[in-house]
Image 1: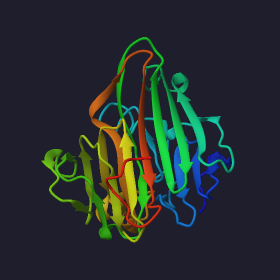
Image 2: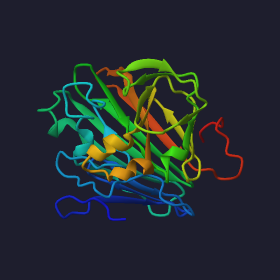
Image 3: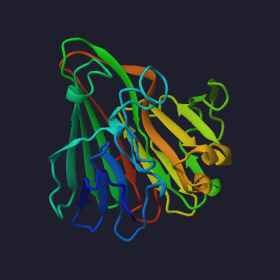
Amino acid sequence: MSWPTLHGEDPLVTLRNAAGDEATLSLHGAQLLSWQPAGAGEQVYLSPLSRPGPGVAVRGGVPVCFPQFSERGPLPKHGFARTRRWVLLTPPVPSAPVAEARLQLDSAMTRTLWDHAFCLVLVARLGPKWLELELQVANTGRTAWSFTGALHTYLRVRDVRDARVLGLLGLPYEDMVQGNAVRTEESPALAIGGELDRVYRGVAQPLQLAGGGEADRRIVQQGFEDTVVWNPGPAKAARLGDLPPDDWLRMLCIEAAVVHRPQSLAPGKTWRGLQRLELPLAPGFDLSAASA
């Protein structure tokens, strides 16, 4: 895989744990680019046409959307965190049982876009067949402010039409393809046959991405109240310049998000949100099991 680079540099952080799992992040956007558990293939989708640069995001991996989700506000789409260069606070220790890295972005370079004082920390943890991303949002100013955002996770599949998302049954969702209409999920196994863009509200239970030509993956979130399920479908994919037209079949976004109710943060307070991705360690993968 050829990783995106900026200005001829190679701003990458690689995590390797004692079990042989590996993950790669870019300092551009603190973006996860790759997760390869030992004995398994690549788990996240990264577009081969992505050309990141100043103000331009990577298409794929796990973009950090902050302080605005999508176009729901005055800022550029998905805010600015995914297009800024972060600082590596804590480099990973090679071959640790759980490899960990911490990256930081603060408000020093963004006040002209968003006049609030903040500090973001992304903590990436890599264990045996699991990956955890924790976003910490601190209000370092003197006035309260609110934000929306997401960990915009692109999961790799061989054919999304054969994939199913389990765990959403009975949840209300906002259907952004159908004029933001609010509906209730009636399927125990959500299928993707074309463009899909939904904000599921009040997601507290684990989800499972099954099928699609890959091993099942379990998705757990904490702190984030919403889950966005997104695929551009064939028509929209053909209009995206940084995505091969047929690659809508190769990916599905399952995003831990704060969308429906913006998160308010008082001065001196810190909010934490987490998404954990897991592969089955043994037969009998249990969707209802609690996160370790």
